Image 1: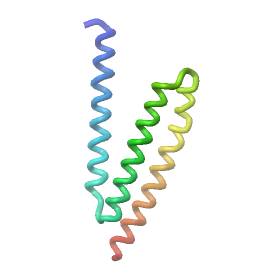
Image 2: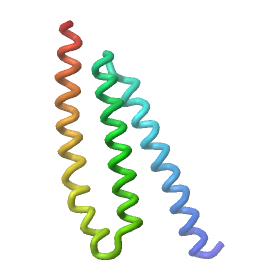
Image 3: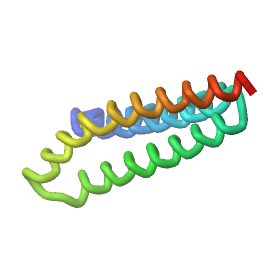
Image 4: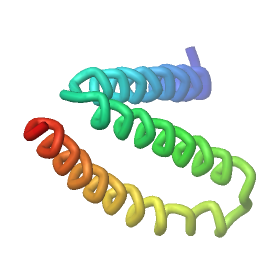
Length: 100
């Protein structure tokens, strides 16, 4: 096998493993919820997250240099903020459901 074939094979296998990791992480994030409101919130978060990632990847394919590289700026800022806000809201929902 030449280096080009190994590169393609690594890219395909890596992509499949990354996708499977995302699916497994999404499944367990929803499965490990404690109540119906929390589960509904996690499903919404998962849908928004998957749509955002697909949109980001589509823009990476469509845009030309240097614009595709500028996409990494909001990608490095917005997901951590969204995750932090989502975790706080999930904790509030979990606390309110445990009291009820």
